[in-house]
Image (cartoon, rainbow, N blue to C red; front, top):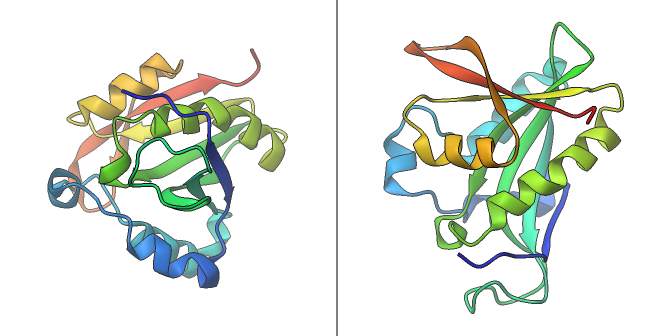
Length: 175
C-alpha cells in the first residue's frame, strides 16, 4: 500500500461536484451490500432532510500522484458526511465514507481518518467524540477504523429497513 500525503478534504459543492461524484466507482461488493450508499444517494438524503444538519465533504488527491491513474490536481476520489448527534452536542457522527475502487488500498482512507479530528474540531467545535456505525460484516472498514483509534462501544445501532444492526465505534477527540 502506498501512503499519500496529498489527500485533501473540502466541503461538497453539489452543482460543481455532481459529475465527479457520479463517477466514483464502488466495488461490486459495496454495491451489493446493504451497508453502502452512493455519494449521489447520500447527497439526495441531505437535501431531503436538512434538519439533520449533515455536512458533505469530498476527498481529493493532489499534484503528487499516488498512482498514474490520477491525472490532475484535485481529482475527487471519495465522499463522506459529518453530522451532529441528534441528542448530544458533544458527539458528531461520521457517515458514508466511499473511496473510488481505483484508489482503495492506497492510503486515501487512512489519510482521511488522520485529517478527520481536525476537520470535526473546525466544523463542530463542541464535539468531543466522533461516532460511526459499521456493518458487522464490513471487516475491512472495522480494521481501518480500529487502527486509527476508534473503539467499539458495545452498542448496536438500528438501521432503517434492515433487521441486523450496525456496530457503534467512537473516537475520543479530547485526547
